[in-house]
Amino acid sequence: MSGGSIVYATDREPTCLDPHNFGDMPQTYVARQYLDSLVSERPDGSVVPWLADSWEISPDGLTYTFTIKEGVKFHDGTPLDAEAVHANFVQILDPATESATDAGYLRPYYESSRAIDTHTFELKLKTPYSALLPVLSQAFFGIESPKAMARGLEENCQSPVGTGPFVVKAWNRGQSVELVRNEDYNSAPADAKHQGPAYLEKVTWKFIEDGSVRAAAVQGRDADIIFNPPPQQVAALKADPNLDTQEFTHTGLPNGIALNTTRAPFDDALVRQAFIHGSNAEAAVKSAYLGVYDWEHGPISSTTPTYKDLRRFYSYDKDKADRLLDEAGWTERDADGFRTKDGKRLTAELVYSADTGDTPPADVTLFQNIQAAQKEIGFEVVLKPLPQDQYFAAFSDKNAYDGLTGAYWNSPTPAVLSIVFSSDSLKAAPGNNMSWVENPKLDELVRAAAATTDVAEQERLYGQTQDIVAEQAYQLGLYPVVTRLVAKKKLKDVWIEPSEGEPVLHDAWLAP
Image (cartoon, rainbow, N blue to C red; front, side, top):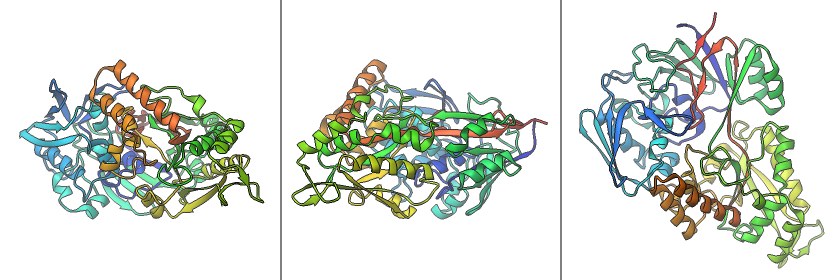
């Protein structure tokens, strides 16, 4: 079983290979191959040991004490110990390196951390945070060598050093990341299919932005496994007898459009509600994605614990949308048929990334479908592509957009509702609360939900939170975020971990 190399072809190149910095999905997917986490999440939401052999939680839920696995070394030879883990939390929450992702998860709760002794690490919280362990299972919180981190951000972005089954050999910008087997690997999670080093000797993590080219690569000789095939080719790839397809629908906030509540026209709840009911989103998604994706309408995806079906707040209803806009005072029409009030046209600008890795062609079709539906109710929607750097910058600038597309947040727990919709999130990491929501009742609910471990109480509190988000029309959900992998049949035992939908290649092997 041991030996061989593969090519993994994906659509987007990371901005940095260190997932502590920036915090985007392309980072965490590749980082899972060379970084281990303290714990590993299982499909049922429970967690099992990884770099932490065990842990204890104080009765008040404020102190987590982890026993760190002994005999583990980073790829640069530095021993893994409690001080190394502490150094990671210092970096993760250092404003100079802190990503909005890590800050969103930890900043509102983190009090301090320290090494009690060589293999005992203590993490203290300001308030209880029942989602902490699943959160720490993500590659965003993968543990890195403190010696390597001390090299500085630029060098660490180029070649982060972990304890994982593969080592970063080289990052060929614009082309690939070369990963080679860690021959001394001895720290697989408790739920791995095997312990010890990876079977594969080498992985070429290749960037192919064009989905059709990726599909051709796995059907031919240029790739052994691909991520995210284009929707028009999914059926053919699934039918190919030489290929296997596996899918994982992410928990968290589905892909959608965040409506900026701080500026006109979406500072008016009636207009937001009208926009949502006038979008005909279900038909727009089905048409653009050829039925590959189901419509995900709500504040959190249907796979997320405590999900509540609030379809009635998002369903297409042109008559209701018209009534809402009339009620909001947009009663006149101009020569082009668009609504006006006080001589001003009802217009909203939706921004999206011009990078096709961020915004595939089907997304643009989806936005155009919504644009056409909005015209039917007299609502002008202007689609505005932005260069990738400007698009990412827009997330933390409330004056940069009316509606922000690509608004999703993968998360293993419903605590994502706090990250995306609470005012605490605005303080912790501007850019996560993409609708710029400030709602005291919502804040109260998500704080209480995070503080309890009672599942029924969490469901009640997060259910009420979803009610508020739906009633106030803060965002329009469109489709789920999905990890879809297509691999040659000879490549066995690739699996998808559930915290972030990250592909795991440690157990993968090539059949003869």
